[in-house]
Image (cartoon, rainbow, N blue to C red; front, top):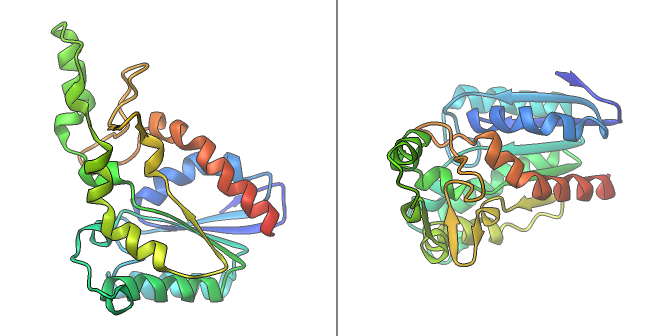
Length: 229
């Protein structure tokens, strides 16, 4: 638990991706927060079905805390990769995510959910800092293969977008983080301006470079939370 300077009680809920984001978000949230609690379990799921012990634990935490804000940050590729049942209302993955967010909203004044990081799901070690540094050391400064087309990026995430966009919840702020990595028809795994990579390891955890890219987007969400609270 981290104290803040405001009045809002904030719960950051998720897995190791929440841990990474929480370090970045705490200074941004402290002006509005009375306290910031991180509750995360490595490798677990929130919006798709996962281990029962952790699910039971975070249910108890949220029921007891009744946060002003619950912010869900996870990596759950099943939202994007599981085949989509049509109509979406009959899709089991959609139903699970919808019902989970409904439970969270029953015990929170406001809820934020970060959409999946498309880059972290697509990430391959061929786009790692080691490969980039090796290429630079060899005097090869062409990095066209360190990006994918925006069409391929969007197509990969189509099922998650359809599922999450269908969820109707007045307390829910849907935070689309992955769009920030795309410009002029391409989506990047590194910053072309300084050659810093966006992912730190084989699991696709965000580097500080990617978090800085997302800062304006996170600021927008925080400002919207201030208005709602």
